[in-house]
Amino acid sequence: MNKINLTSLALLTALSLCLSANAQTATTYTAKKGKLSEPELQRWSHLDLAKDSIPGMSVDKAYAELLKGKKGVKVIVGIVDSGVDIDHEDLKSVVWTNKKEIAGNGIDDDKNGYIDDIHGWNFLGDAVHETLEMTRIVKKGDDGSATYKSALAAYDEKNNKALKDKQQVDFLIATDKAIQTNLGKENYTLEDVNGIVTTDPDLTKSKMIMSRILTNAGPTFRAEIQEYSKYVYDQLNYNLNKDLDGRKVVGDNPEDIKNTKYGNNTVYGPDKEEALHGTHVAGIIAQVRGNNIGGDGVADNVEIMAVRAVPDGDEYDKDIALAIRYAVDNGAKVINGSFGKSYSPHKQWVFDAIKYAEKKDVLFVHAAGNDGENIDLDENSNFPNDSEDNKKEFASNVLTVGALTNQYGDGIIAPFSNYGAFNVDVFAPGDEIYATIPNNKYKYLQGTSMASPNAAGVAALIRSYYPKLSAKQVKQILMDSGTPLPSDVILGEQQDVKAKADKTSKSGKMVNAYNALLMAEKMSKK
Image 1: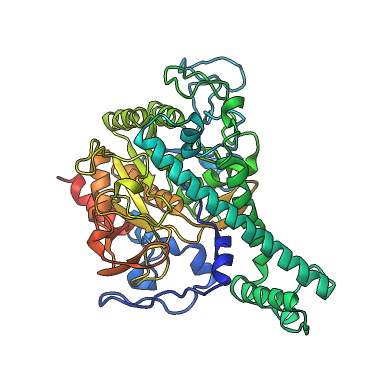
Image 2: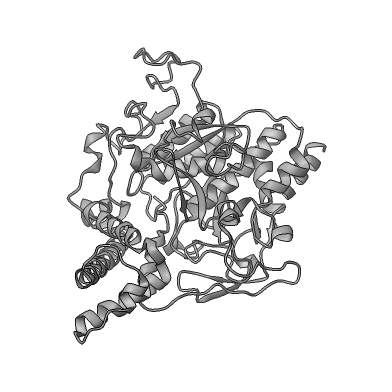
């Protein structure tokens, strides 16, 4: 699964240095200076670079100038993810309903193999936590293959890092406790910390560290520590745990693609809170516009089909292949896939599903991944993709999306975002995106997982207002109509790779809804 780039990871940075956004501007646009206001931040991905000096997708401009008074057709968008809270106040009115199925009668009325699949299907059943694919490969043992050797090396590196991160997070928690004890209270401010007078070297060190953290993270520091702690411990307890059999509760054989009758119809899974990722993705695309609740979705005439296939860990190829086919067979015209992994033992199953979607004229929008790497290189592969040799695409319906920050300039590509002149098609807003999370809540999240649904939302807009355009045409429109990236950009987690825009992706552009709709209008008349 493409992990969300946790805000709490900034706590580590706060211990050493504070990164600042680059302020370089291109000749065509003026970058907004200073911090975005809360209203701007909540909808920055919908704003317009020329008008607002913020590199959004010009969604608001498109509605105001191009779509006013127009009527589109309903478009079903499949959300292949961790599950969706279909009862959320800002989503429940846009949830897809299978009209061929009678709710609650325990009968497969539409004879598609899934009983009572009213709003989608849950291929994971009650499973939540899973291992990474590299963990599964290592667990199977040395078969002498290059894949095993690669997976073992990657596993050892990731496990060692997680153990170091555990030491780090345990240290942060202990430091927080030391300050609480000294001050005699649980909640404290930067002023409280700076006011501590001590000759104790350990307390002096704790004071210095917490002062830095409070300066950078602010009053939410403890929530960020807790979030970071959960991320680290989940890695060790689940993702990298070779003794974990997360699949046991599902009841199928993930090595058998012919066994398709498993899972259930609870599309948010056994615990709604664990459907946070999928609910956020769904909200980016479809949370109701203009209702003064939470944020606004990109697309106004869509239905969300929830297909749960992504656990807390790496997804199984079988689940993804069947999930794509399920969405296609039930009418989705756009599928969002905010997931990915470095190893894919049964990648052909997923490739075949993508080709099936292509035949049925369905666009598959996929997140590029959050490793800050060039995924054109074989050692940095991010599955699923649409090429087996990094030279030729085997399907025309896959749009791979990298993530942008809200600061226009050479630092516009998010440090965590993968890139690649062949394997990434285009970029879209993916940093600090405000959208729905379970139980009628909202939150800022970041990752290419957020960039993908932003692009998918624009794709759904095109398919709604210009339904005669094919998935291939929509993909090309999103790439060709985009706003050009600044000519020179900085890439990677360490921000140590400098590149020309055309080396970041096939298009060298960022998705722009206004331009896309103009191009769709012209193309539809040909």
